[in-house]
Image 1 (cartoon, rainbow, N blue to C red):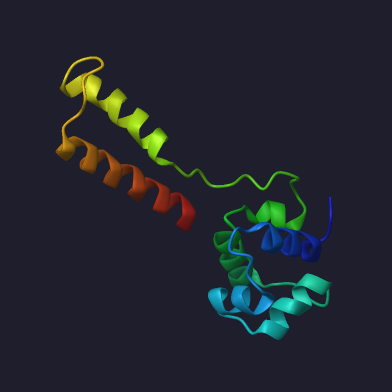
Image 2: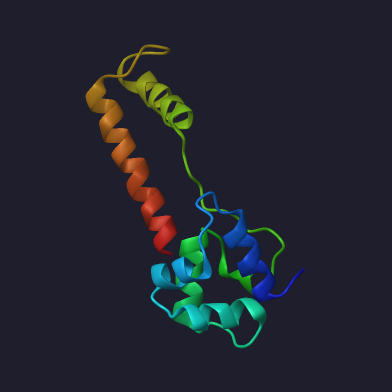
Length: 122
């Protein structure tokens, strides 16, 4: 399964922006030394830090703690997925297969984004 430190390091190195330990620490409000110690196994994050790390790395606390082998990434939607959602919603407004109005697209996108933000906060 890997230790918490192993998982933190793996998640950090897998991120597209390739953050340094210092970058992660700054983003979650802790010192570089504190974060570095978590990665090498000299201490563990408290509840608040664990929550911040989970949000930063977009994974569950269960994954960080080694209780699950799946990071269970929070859902994210790319433009194609949003477009599909718009078309599904448009079936009720405009009829099957028709292009939804710009207002409907904007409305749906805002709703979806609000829901995704709620999930990320939890």
